[in-house]
Every structure is written in structure tokens, then in C-alpha cells.
Image (cartoon, rainbow, N blue to C red; front, side, top):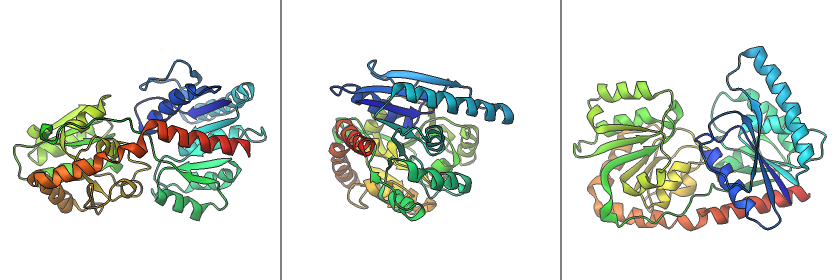
Length: 358
């Protein structure tokens, strides 16, 4: 059986991580060959099993208007030619606008395409993107989404889809003894507006726990603004901007509290990894994903999006109540079994195999 996985890059990101895990795992299945097709020439952040073939369409990122249109046109033809040469049993595509690209490129070929939704479908200002998806998704062999809310939203927008909910894989981590956790609040995520870091900084400034620090793992265009906000709030000496890190699990395993203030998510990979390590967790109840992972009051706290005082109060509660934090930690770590890569990769493969055979 031949599988093609299409994704724009393998730079640091949730979808990229999933694609690399799927390609590596499937390459180890008997009788299965995997080709990973990238759209852009860029850094490869995530390792891939050498049994998987990696091809690149060679598109340059951030080209100006007409040059970009011409390059995308060439890439459409190149991708179509590549897939027809590979003759796969199915193509699995990642990320909304690239799903549209993939379906457009393969129109009329008879190749079964499965598209994987990555972002929250409830994010605003997506009218044109929705129009293309409503036009093309009914032609897909299947649609994969990451949360129950996302599935409901897609079914309401686009009728007749062959759709399934599959969470993202998270490698097993053995959490430390609870007493080994350190006095810092952790967040992992790209420094962009929808991740809510400004809310977290304001909540941290309300804690009145001077022996605790805030660690932000991730980089992005808002870093300068967030550093300035930390200074304005008087907490810059206790906030550490770590940039992009590869050993996210190690940071989660050490954190005294994991705080997740995202306003929108597709599936919150960082939150899932924190729960697997047993980190006592507070999250905004944003669309979509956190409510699929956290049962409020059992393995974490869910807070209304934008309620900064409640976010601060929940973090403070876990700092001050060691017994509750340990109970959350033990309950959170039990989420590991379902999210193990071998289980999730098998679910992905079975859905794609069946969709490809229809």
C-alpha cells in the first residue's frame, strides 16, 4: 500500500509534528510505503524515519502578488504530476488552505484524498476559505477533525461529509514524583494573538506569589510586545522567554502549573502533552479542544475565555493547594493511553485506508 502525506513544511508546529509521527510510524507497517510531500523549502524541525521518502515542491515562501500566483500555479501542476507518478492508495493532506490546494490539484485524477482540519472552525474572518472548502470538501474521500465541536461545526457548514474525530498523538512521558515539580507556571505556544499570552501575563501579575516564575516556550511576532507588557506589569524579572524548544515534554514534566490561555485552537497539542506528563493544568475553555481533554475539577480547570481574574484565581488555587494539584496531576497523566502514537496512528491509517478503498 502506498500513502502520500502532504503538508507545507516540517517546521515547528502541531500539524507538522503529527505528519512526521504518522510518516515515521506508517513506514514501519509491513507492506506500506510513505511519501511525504512538502510545499515550501524551509527548515525541517521534526525528524522523520529514513524509510519514508521526502519530496519538495520547492515553492519559495512570502513571494509578492503576481509571482506568488505564478508559483502556486506551477506547484499545482507539479504536485498533480508527482502524485500521479506515485500512484498512491490515498493522499492525506494537512491544514485548511493546503487542503484546498491538494483537492484542486487532484481534480479528475481519481486519487482519493483525505483532508485533515487543523484550526478551529469557529475562528473569524475565514469567509473565502470557507467558500473553497464548501465547494471542494464534498469531493474528498474523508475529512479528519480533532475535536467533537469541530466535527459539529463542519457538519453544520458542509453536508454529507465522511468525517471522523481523531485526536493528535502524544508520546508517553513518565511523570516525575509530584514533589519534584518546580515553582514555575509554564506555557508552550507560538507568540501570536490567538494564543492569549497577554492574558497570561496579566493573570501572572495578579498572583502575588513572588517565589514563582512564568516560563514561555515558543517564539513569534509578538515577543517584543509581550516583553514590553511584562515590564509594564512589573514582572519582567520573573518571566523567562525561552524561544522554540524541542524538549517540550521535559519542561511540562517540571512545571508546577501549566496554563493554557488560547482563544482558539484546532487541537491543543501543548495542552495534551502537559496533561500526559501530569502537569496540574488550567486552560481557557476555548473552541475547540480543551473540553475534549479536561473534565473541569477532575483533571484540570476550565476557565471562560478572556476571564483574566478567573485564570489568575485558578492558577493561584493550584499553587496554594498541593493536595488538589497532586490529584489533578495523577488524573491528567491517565489521559496518556488514548493519545499514545501507536494508537492514534493506527486510527489515522484505518480511516485513510477505508476512505481510499471507497
